[in-house]
Image 1 (cartoon, rainbow, N blue to C red):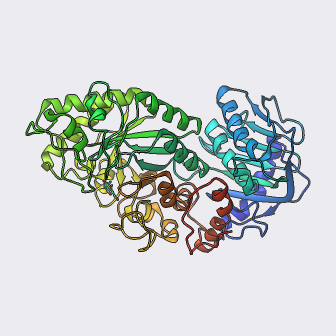
Image 2 (image 1 turned 180 degrees about the vertical axis):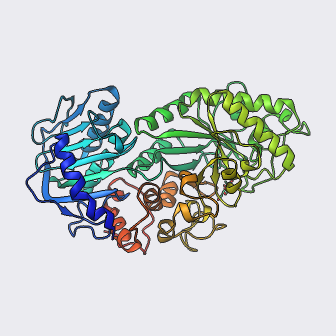
Image 3 (image 1 turned 90 degrees about the vertical axis):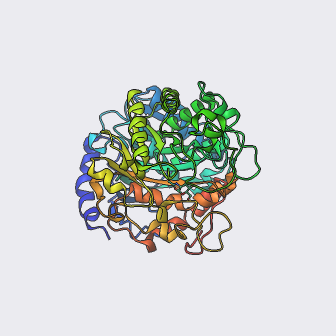
Length: 531
Ligand code: NGO
């Protein structure tokens, strides 16, 4: 039970909303809803990730044909969010849901999205959602906050709203006020498109599903031993040769720079930043097989389609290696609006510690020279980190060395966040080197107490990787990712106090019909009372 939430909500929110004239001053006396005891009708308490505060007012809003979505101000960014919401609500309702600019709250029955005159303490992604009998008002100080709040509106609608075909209404939602903002600014999911290649369409679906649970980063693991997946114009054989294989017998594949641009744009519209990773200096067989000169021996190894790790390395002693690295980073930086480039850095066991440290120093310098910040797996903390470099914890205590150098950390502890770990010993897909991760395990941990020497203030956020050695199709991706992504999203977004597995499992169970409506092939864990 969260005492702070219970005491402060009526005192803080109602006057604030009335003062902002956001259409929330209904005559219905608000009733408090603790996150640990959602209302029995579930409607206002089944949101994932759990909002920072919820106050339900016992009424109901009904969306009917003729309703519109009004955005204020009608900037391109706000209009795009209005359009996105309309696109999500139109198929199941069959309503036209026109999107128009507004100056002040619209008439009764409409949806109002506003960034005008909104409480700045909501931050970049926070929002204030007021559902009254008359209208839905979503206020945020930034467009990203509006976008996150739109996901809450979707989750307040009946689950059938998520079907892509016409469904039976009525389209009612419970009334109340939600004030919400995230715990961590970085909440990511990683998709390994190197071990198996996935189409632009698959990546976009992955992005869409991540957006539903308010993630804001999608990290693409674009190169590994088994495949190089992004065209680099200065080194075309990386994809023509290095992109031609994957784990097993499949033909591999790669993204053109235009494909990658489409993915970046698709993510940007969902207020998600794409983090591209080129894994180096290890995990580089695809590059080494494409260009003999990148090998210390001058001889290209054969392409690799197995699942071993730690055996390959670029040649740290050759100048051409750094020309190559700089070319790749330059082209990737030019294609990537986000501030980070991920240089990998994990398991470079085939080079000496001194060579590794030199390599990481030089790669970081290249990243910085193109105006970006470096992200790397925790091993990069063995180099000299530049200010702004971020270390991604996965399986050792090396992130502590990063913290000692002043770096921030992204928490991806393998035993909790690796979506490629099997749920149980009978899961057909996945690996188990970091253990089994049932749904309860995916929910029951806290980033700030996970690794000694890495505390809340050191942590930029969390990220869950899906490595794809055993994952071949979108259905496989969905099975390993869901429902664990929902658990993970709550760890990244919601406050840690008052969290309870017993409360959460019921809330997650209520997402069964939503995931089914979206066509998600999720693992129906026996730990969860699925509806
Ligand atoms: C490790 C390894 C990856 C594997 C993954 C499989 C990291 C950072 N490096 O995680 O190459 O694919 O495990 O679980």
